[in-house]
Image (cartoon, rainbow, N blue to C red; front, side, top):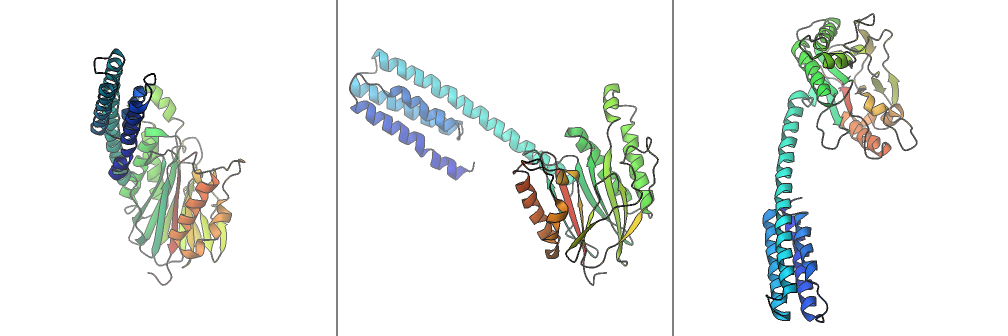
Length: 363
């Protein structure tokens, strides 16, 4: 909560102290409202820091002393007990406010670290790359999370642009580590591997070698044996109205063209990265038409597996058509809002989307 709203809220416990003081002084001798004064520092501790809480507690103690002097005296046993109790409770809630403030500072620092990690690991995609206009979005399932196992990246080559989207199996720090590994390998090799098949083979080798790390503990190695990464890798030439695609177990991209939508399904999909030792692998790229004005939508399974209250999956294909003519940014803004509405405001899994448009007349 910002400083100005917190200062405004201080009027509530101060008004409570004034109200209890006046009523207690005017009340019959048999009525004692002094114990209600402890509510003032308790309420303050819920939104303010230790200084404000201590000041309100001191004000409540002063009010209790005034009540005692007006009604009887400070040495009266009843008022003495109330004063001691109020002092102890004020000290307790002030220490609670100090602890909560330290915890908030730690959370702020952790969020800063998470944001920095996100910017390093999952760098924002450029809005414009060659003849392409790009928009991207990452929706974390956890409220405080900044990055998870979903990933995307873009790189320029001598002839065009290469785009990667992927989804690491699993969650937590291991998923983030695998995502960082794959992103680093892609960024380092995307502009050096002339052939798309060679690039994907390099990515596969990087992921498999990490999963088979002999230095890892035995129990961790057993768990890592079940890990893999689905990925789709695109090579989009600058001077040809085409794109080349290798799909490694990832949901097929959508092609939006003049109000129509179609799936870019490859005839020979490759297994997810990290599973080639178990499945016969074909890393040959397939070519699709990608004309000026077309939009290719990449996404992770967190999008299409989002359910509503009735358990219905999110109908991405139908929902993507309506905003496709307005460009990538408007398309993703619409899909994000619609996806969260479909899922009731909270996703069960991280979701990432990348929209790529080939600009008319660009070279």
